[in-house]
Image 1 (cartoon, rainbow, N blue to C red):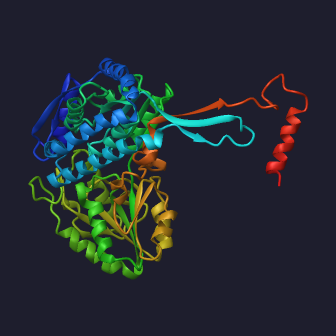
Image 2: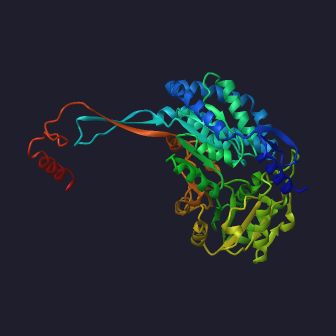
Image 3: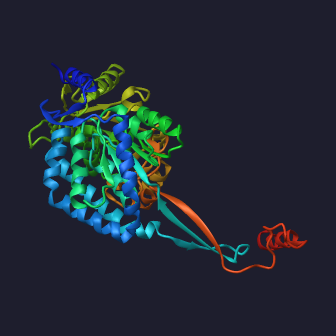
Length: 502
């Protein structure tokens, strides 16, 4: 039985039972068994999280930091254990899993260390007209945040919401991908072990129906990561109760190589950005636009590097399998379409698709309206396009509905080109570096979603601003009263003309 067929059979069987199995995509072996939470079970978890949230909020920033620091230290101590779970459910190499967890720990540390500075009450100027007022703004927790996570980075990506939401004073109910429920379970259990007195991080598992139930279960905000199509369904469900959402969807990220670029570094970045994690990275490189003057040399460097890489399930493999079996057909279709329409397969080709693995594929000179250019492939493939100049490169890079990440290699014009790209993040002379900087907001535009995780913006994403004014003293001319003296408004108008009319 093929992996695709096996995956479909398991999903149908699971949908008819009260539990489902997580599978090692490398071998087809069962990794674990997990409950399918129905709507009632989800509501119960959300209610329990809500009951625990008040005490968590009352701890204040310093109190929460102490508890979250305990959790962080436990994650550090047991990093290898969690990495093993990530490997078993995604198939990615152990070193890649460990690198993912390094980022998890660093972001958790940043969120807990900076929550108070970003969210605490602060004074703002009331202005001349309201000079009798003290004005403050602070950021208060929403209450219960529902987090729906992906499978490709099953710890790092959802923790960009979980860690920041907890640091802001919220409780969290986490619905991991049905492909990686064990990672979610491990995270929740480790939190309960480190912070047993505050059960504010809770788990629900299952398929799409469980995620839909979470949107309807009384949460105060939802953070979703996944496909654009599913993101739209999440938004529609949340809209019924005006539940605010944060949506991080896919990307079709471009890399621009200018004529003055460090070609060796650019080629290395292109191959890593395209092939690492078997290309299953929302901010991975899928398209390259390279200046004609250096295109031949760059393509040779990319081809030499990509041809050396090998997928597999063994420890020494460069990358692992395609985790979601159904994605294999999409990858194959994109390769077929690109080649049929005139693209040159420089490395690999259709025969590179050998489920559950896909060998590196590099294709050059593909029509710009082909699926390999316009749609997210999510596999270890790379399209390299020759352009007249970087202006053409920018135009092509922006000619997509997606707008998540991008990369620029240029010695002289890196920052200029970055600013012209319609994307949420850009790495100049490196690749995916922005994801490793906890202080930087992470998110996209267009079909890549909206809202931000990470950084100060990420903390504020999980808190509601509250503005407060307090009267310090009475003023002789108060225009906001029916008892105001005649001529009060006229005096205020004259004052405004003096202040702002020149």
